[in-house]
Each structure stands twice: as C-alpha cells, then as structure tokens.
Image (cartoon, rainbow, N blue to C red; front, side, top):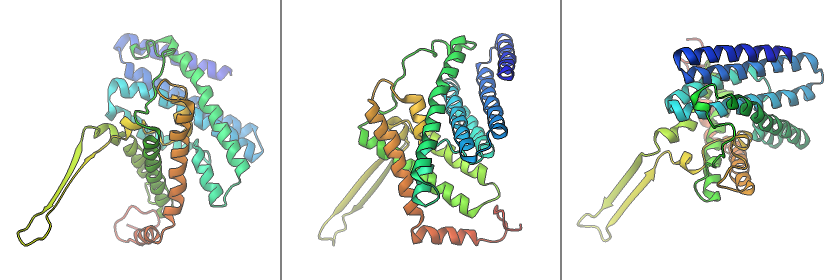
Length: 324
C-alpha cells in the first residue's frame, strides 16, 4: 500500500509539472496509462509470491488483468476523443503486446473460458469463478479512474469523473449482437491460427489483427463499396441487373466494437441508451456466441487444410520453427 501511495505521489508530481510547463494532455494520459500498468504489474508479482494455490492465484491474476485492461481503456477513450484514431491505435497496439507478454494464463475475457469448457480443457465451475473475478476487477477499477479524473490534471479530464455516459448501441439489439459476434469470431479464428502456426512475431501479429478490427470501423466508417452487374445481351431471353451497396466500418456506429464482455460492461453497462438486458444480449450473448462458433469453424476441414499448408511453407519466413 505504501509503495502504491509513493508511486501515485511521484506520478502526480510529474504530470502536474509536465502539464504546467508544456501543456501536453497526451503526456498526462500516457503517464497515467503507464502508472496503471505499473501498479497492475506490481500487484501481479505480489500475488504470485503470496498466493500458493494455483487456481486461487489465477483468480487474482484474472481480476488484476481485467482491472488493468479496463483502466487503460477508460483513458484510451480520452486519447481517441482528443488525439485521433491513429494515436489511439498506436497506444492500443503497444498495450496489447504488453498484456500478451505479462498476463501469463490470465485472459480478462470470459468467452475464452467457455471455449476451454467446450474443448474439455476446463469445467463450468472454474469458468464461472474466473468470469466473476474478471467482472469484479473490471467494475472496481472505475473508482480508481474516477478518483484520477476528478483531479482534472488535464483539460481533457474536466467534468469526466461524474458525467453521464451514453451507450454505443445505435441499432436494434439483434443487429448489434450480430456485429459483436462476427467480429469476435474473426478475432478468435485469427488467434487460434497464430497459436497453431507459431510465427516468430506471433504476439505482434495478433496485436495488429486485434487493433485493426477495433479501429477499422472508425477509419472507414464513411466508405461505401458498390458492385454493379448487368447482363442484357441481345440474345438473352432475360436481362439481369444486380446492384449492391455495402457500408464499410459501420460496426462502431452499430455497437461500439468491444469484443470483450467484461470490457464492455466496465465501460458501458448502465449507460443511457440501452437496458441491462439489451447490454447483456449484445456484449455477452453476441460475443460469446461468436467465440463458440469460432471453435467449430476452426475445426472445419477447409480451415485445417489451409493452416496445415501454411505451416509447411518453407524458405524465407517468419515462422519460429523454420530456418531463414
């Protein structure tokens, strides 16, 4: 506790000085994210030394990981709103790599435990306990965020601590659930492929894919793809004309694109714009359904054949078990 207070004191001195001298709110946000990650890292090391029983230790690690994830993402909202999507993407990419390297067996994501149950790697009781630990960490961290925002060290934090939040769900519940489910399914398929292929830069590649899925909708939200086909030849008995218009990147106008039930609950549960039941339908049922579907899709012969063929690729490659 004393260590945490000392670190917080040093942090406040640094950010106040930086903000006063250079008026750099982005530096303030960066330092706060670093502080959150440092405190989580210290708490993780403390648990690893103090708790001997493996499963109890894992529950604490899940809670810490969820708190770190949600705490950083609260501040990333500030970064995205004030400094743009590109800056947000860089932060998220770096953080995803950091989390992959430091969380160990913790995932801070409930549907990974459901996947373990389906594949016979875990039981329902342990999956529920892990989910409860993640929810506890994700919800409790808001008080920590609120305390920091209330200090209003930066102009970007003014009136943030106690303002009413607005839900990101802008469409009917079913549509939002489908968006979250499809994106989660794609993300999990990519992660499973990388796990089996084991490329040399698997962590960075997985982080890039996850970051791309999160920010793609923002970057291309106004892009419209069109396809027009027409067959009206003189000898044809029937003329055919097809026109298709697809809006790219609307996922984030639809549901917010969280792809993690605990993260969505920590950031948006209870916000104005949807009920708790609708929130659960979109961010829990939708995401978990997408994850479960990915388990069975990945076992399809076509996908397994593709993964096997890629793993056998030789020559200059990024694969860890191949010599360049």
